[in-house]
Image: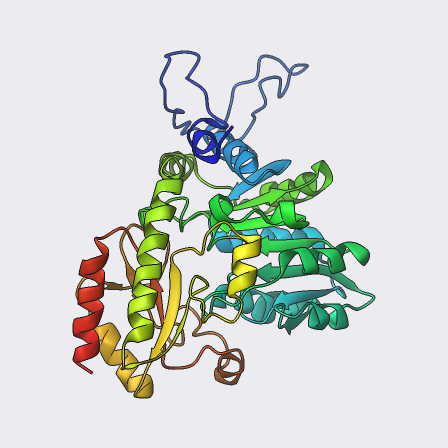
Length: 383
């Protein structure tokens, strides 16, 4: 069965009571049991633990990622938190991509480090650096690829091989490419993380997260955290996300095509100092991008000549591109990582990994691409 068919039909079926083609929103706290002896006979007791609408989304995402199971969360950060809590204890060590979403960095360094968990932020684009960072107490490798916001890639097969050789689970944040373009479990990873807020929703309407696992054991451990910590996704958010996913493939194709055209325009513009987009032949890891994914995605970043002030003027001058956090939506969003998405990362650490103060991140939407190019061109002309 093809991906587009699965994104529409997997995990859902007509409502057995009414025949509704859409999964109902089971907006309920609790579920009446037939008897004490038949407790949980229908599979549900309390919506913090499980909900039929959320369950339908979880089944769909597990199918799309070719995983064993999936659990959905109130936010993408709650999903990352569930992986950390399910795999790490005080005294354990984790390897994390040195370029990652600022919230991931904040969670590791400002929260879990206080409880005796150690984190090493490694250039996971180098398998050799990952191997060198492994310790006797390493219990998790967490990679983000393409990385937010520089688009740096991790060789998933190579890092998964290192993880497997050391008995360490490899978790991959696959938010930027989605399973339509990249399947980390097929490349040897053990766990896949998503912010469903982004491309799965696609419409700036919800916040949510998901964790897809390769084995029943992993699924059980992470579901325990989901229930115990009370961070399950709401049925309303799950229902909206179920609708968004139905158009994921067509949105990704159009947005990615738009992103390539914009990246080529920016690369040729005399006022642009550099552009980072995996689909460009000039991108340092272009061949890896082609070999481990079926597409390049709709995220890019660039830096204009004139430094920080020039970059800020660009972001203030655009009219069609919205200056906002988030990504993956049908609207094109422009973001200043240093003051927005990665503000909690120490300045010297941002500079070290290439998140400069003049870096501009662009999440390309579904608008007519010439309109987006015209908007960016006018903004560049104003610098």
